[in-house]
Amino acid sequence: MTDSHRSALLVASRPARRRRIAAALEGQGITVVAEIDDPDEALPLLEQCEPSVLVIELSTGQEGSDLVVRNAHVLDFVGAARKRAPGLRVIAVTESLDPGLVADAATRGVDAYVLEPNSD
Image (cartoon, rainbow, N blue to C red; front, side):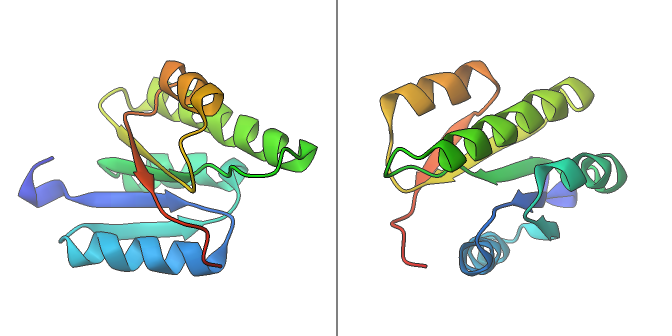
């Protein structure tokens, strides 16, 4: 990532987490070009803003069908984003490194993980 193009698109469902992630990124000199909760709305923003980094939220914890569906939807978006912007770096923020989720995310284009305890 060059100094002239240090920007990120942030996709996370929880507002408090989005604020914390955005503040952390900006503290590192990365401009957050958009914060959004819905991956369906993120693809047009990705094309419009052309960020160098995509930061997504993957939820872990209690196995619930809503959680599984949300993560699958986010990872589908990651795959579409990587097809449109092959050089895009993808970082997942999660509460724990669930081995199955990590393996699935890695095969679908996630480059790195940041652990953040659920403090919402």
